Amino acid sequence: MSRMEGQCWWYLLVLSCLFQTLSAHSDFYTSIGHMTDLLYTEKDLVTSLKNYITAEENKLKQVKQWAEKLDVLSAIAMQDPEGFLGNPVNAFKLMKRLNTEWGDLESLVLKDTKDGFISNLTLQRQHFPTDEDQTGAAKALLRLQDTYRLDTITISTGDLPGVTHKSPMTVEDCFELGKIAYSEVDYYHTELWTEQALKQLDEGEESTVDKVTVLDYLSYAIYQQGDLGRALELTKRLLMLDPEHQRANGNLKYFEFQLINQRKAQAQEAQKAREEGKERRKRLTSDASKKKKRFREPVPERKMYEMLCRGEGIKLTPRRQRRLFCRYFDNHGHPKYLLSPVKQEDEWDRPYIVRYHDIISHGEIEKVKELAKPRLRRATISNPITGVLETAPYRISKSAWLTAYEHPMIDQINQRIEDLTGLEMDTAEELQVANYGVGGQYEPHFDFGRKDEPDAFKELGTGNRIATWLFYMSDVAAGGATVFPDVGAAVWPKKGTAVFWYNLFPSGEGDYSTRHAACPVLVGNKWVSNKWIHERGQEFRRPCGLNETA
Image (cartoon, rainbow, N blue to C red; front, top):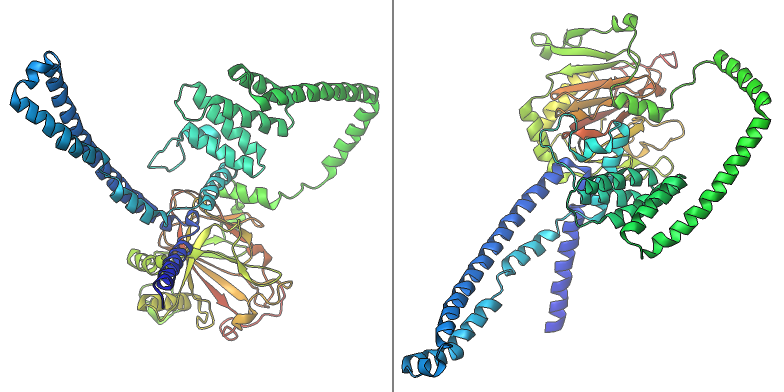
């Protein structure tokens, strides 16, 4: 092999390693657990940068001392140049300075002290987040704003519920959110965040972003939402700051023309409405009486989902509430729990959801997280048409799968689930560990395969998912509830607890009331692990029922 071929192979090897590293560290924003690594990376870079600054300061100190010394010497020498050089020592020192010492000074000035910092930065850059991460985190903030009905001031000042590390947003931060929304053709959020950026600029905050740029985005976003009058007003303000702004001058004429047409159309509609006034009032009266007779329309799923996430869900009636109990549970005299039963609490009646308290210890949680963290990868969903696993924008988390043979503790956890549910674990899926990212969520979905998804779990050969067991491995400061929009149930994370429900009726039919979602995490770090239990092996443990939906 020639030397050139050897170098080519070496470069290919380096590139291969780099791409593997990059692929292993993608989608940072989908896992808070992985994002913590970035803090250590940044801390190391700050240390490297401070070392560089110290080296530069030392270099400048030496140059400054040299300049001050020569400044004094030159002042003396220039008073009587010939007399000064009449001293042979001064003449010698001048020759020495110009021939040697100025060369040394040149070397000192040219000395590159940034090599260490640049090398470290280049090395760490391969672990940096990508544009996708920045956009994903920005979209998460906008999603949280909508779900929890937060205004821009609350977010920009950092006054979020449950926050312990308050962090206000700068003009640049607000404007960046607005620009990302703009690139997604989301003019509603573009308006909110460019307006907040403008407000902070008007209040005197210093920024590298100027008012002209912000007004340019803001006026166009408002125009796109149909408010021509306000768009025109903001464009005029922009032109007062920059009269030569080419786009703004063009928009000014266009907005004025459109506004005249809009007012004409509104006047025509108003005239037409006056002419049809009596007939319209009669029709409205008739429609109103019809509406009173209608049943109340159901709340759309998305709206109900967000209401439940905010804690505004349906409350159980007193009669249904009385049917929910707390108890010490030994699963019908299971030997392991006869003397030390577990604490069980009814969370909901239909579907029946129970919570087990103090069911997983802090030590077990830390071990599970330790085993899972190196393997966390972007969580996937099963495509309902192809059955292929793929990422989705409505599932923002990373997950890892832990098998029973990897560590005795995983086997013990699986056995505990079997002892308390009475269901066979040999046909269940492995323990899945999930860590949610910025605004991490999983929108409404079913755990079981529906009739229109006959191949959902075909490759497993263990039938449908009969039940779900979900461990909460962290407390969450705000948000992060598990909600069931069809029935109005909301279960809030509590470290050390687990919830359990059946996805299928004893007949094997799916229980559609178990459609559930993981609400966006507003503040905090949410860790969960779950066990999906399958039909095979449960024939005698949960016998088939004759009633299709009972």
